[in-house]
Image (cartoon, rainbow, N blue to C red; front, side, top):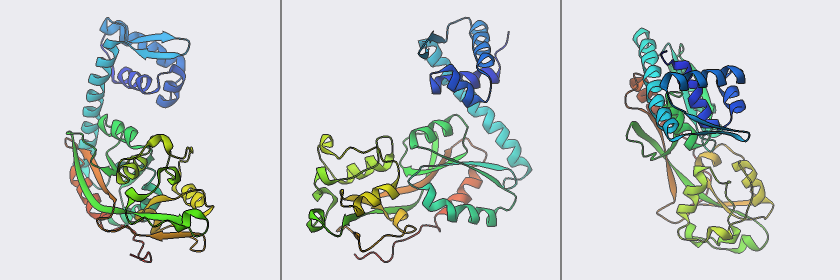
Length: 304
């Protein structure tokens, strides 16, 4: 019995979810069908890939290796299909674009219309999630290109920086926190700092900008939105670092929130695009990167 691409895709979904039900939803198939395909794959390979338990499913050592090898196979298949699309017309097929949440809402409203103008026949699909998921999906060929903070550190990717995104200080205009003078991000008191929850790369970048601090003293909040962080600052609950990309398209109530730039060198992140070096869509991705570089919103009204 020969293994199939369908079986590899189902195994990949199960490895990602760790649960048969969720994996079946991810693969858009019934749970019995997914389970049967996994068993057939184990029989074809002659080894156990999954430890089955009431709480979920865990890969065996052999299973982990098969998943890694299978993802490379699936990525090659995706590239093969992309090559066929590109052979017909690079800008008349589809482009699966991934973007992180701290970029997507503020860049996509300008980027998607620009792509439609530049490539009228191109169908763009968008996936928004955290960096780790985007990287995994780019590696296995589920996505063609991603927009994220660089570097990503994967040697199989081509990474192209398109612009830098400065971090600005946001403080309430009234209350004790309005009185502090913070010329550098490292001057911000840890207990006053508001950040996105764990898993968002913007949180890690803001922490890195603030230098050495005791993360145990950070204000705990399960916040996933920069807009919510901004409202917490306006309510006097803390101070934060906000990216210029966000501030360039977001109204700020100057009566409640004071914005200012830090002394040079400003803390910042590097925004860029990444795609697989082997991708036949690389020329198209380069054109998308050039277009993206022209679209950065700026917060020109913020004082230096």
